Length: 456
Image (cartoon, rainbow, N blue to C red; front, side, top):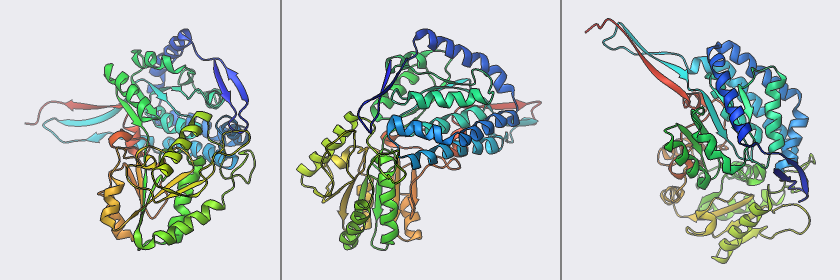
């Protein structure tokens, strides 16, 4: 059984049955059976399904958004935005998939030679709880438009969200088996990966779980895309627009209560503007409203689970004990639910817990540096490499981007995911790319076709 605790109250929300081995087999059988017909459909026919799904979600946005708010504590205003963003991903690939997968003509000794991009088969998406709708469509929209079928194993803490996503496909008349929800227990995931009907795996989640998924996929010689954790730096240099930087970094740090892989976590500030910038950041953090995520005025809801909150608090206390200064927050609140205050730590140094571990919550760690060169070295001093931002002149920021070890860099802007642009990490933040033209190429067979006679 999948038991969900309401993070706002700490009480049981609902309990839903998990899939057993028989349901696993039946689901994969339907995905395999649906693949032959789906891969033969035109891009226009596949696009019609994705556009219908997007329209249905927009029409049902209030109900779908509330499911996220109830199961994982996302503020209702953010939840509505996530439903819209998921619909956008579906619409984007419906519009652009055919161009992204256009045949590449390459001259050789053949009369004609080219590369065509063909679907692989059923793809398994293993997803986390922190963005239930967006991450589902980041996975499925490109895979479906490429002609694959999708099996979604969502996080056990958002089963109602997962069921609702599958129901949208059913409601618009998508071919049976093209997209399915598979509410597996974690112990059964390896069985699904090993099944020969699954041809590829997409995983978003923790580094530890990603390593296990990567090993299981590699053992079966199956392609995988992994988007794992991050300890993402935001570099603020002396020539930055401090007001703009403080506003954007505050937003990046607290969206989804800070429970985002690409959220700014280590804020690296040049010495000459450090104190002024910290004051601006503290002012913005102090004004944020923490509360019931069902309320329209709430900006920060609870942490999704009690164990996650306890781990976050451990990271904060260990960092303070190591010599950091707590300028704001840092204490577990009394009362129901899994709330954690917006916390601002300064005087943070390399090696402290908030620097070496991913902090998944509304906790900002500020580090002081003497130069841009020191800031760059510190930004790269992490086993992760997911995302980063740089606040300085445009020319200088673009020059620095090439030296930052991260899959995406924003210069004077918010780090975000966008259906038009590829997203992913390096080092222990994973491999492969999602979104943009790069994302749809992850799960296709780039088939070379050589047509004779030879012209040699």
